[in-house]
Length: 192
View 1: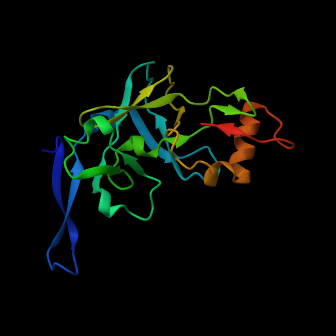
View 2 (view 1 turned 180 degrees about the vertical axis):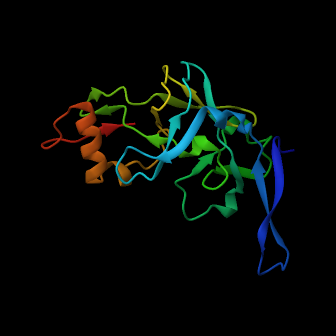
């Protein structure tokens, strides 16, 4: 049995089935979205980011990560929004192994990454953390410190995410190095 599952019809017809396409969506509490706003990130070329709409206190839940539930044999090509359902929840998740939050992920799916350290120096950029749960909704984001209204929310996505594509881009590197007041001309290294 899958907890927190919604089957939704989506506009469009499956060519093979000649029937409406059905998606299994993880049911989440979208009321958390009232705390945040999605708008252009301050990070160059990062697209949208997530900003606090109100003051969020340390330890407070920012939101639940929702999305389309994905079977192991149906992983999409674009995996940048894919989260593996925690091992402790696999039995309850039935045939699903991943959550694809690209289109149905709630506001928290737009939280951008910021490095924890640059050249070994702590940045203090990350103001949120993802927490895995053994039951639906499987993932929540929690404030690591007080986050002021208007402040962009940044986090790590965990040790298995490929950050290099983004962090090796000169504009992103230069943005974070300047923000941390670190000279990265001779050496540049970061940790998540």
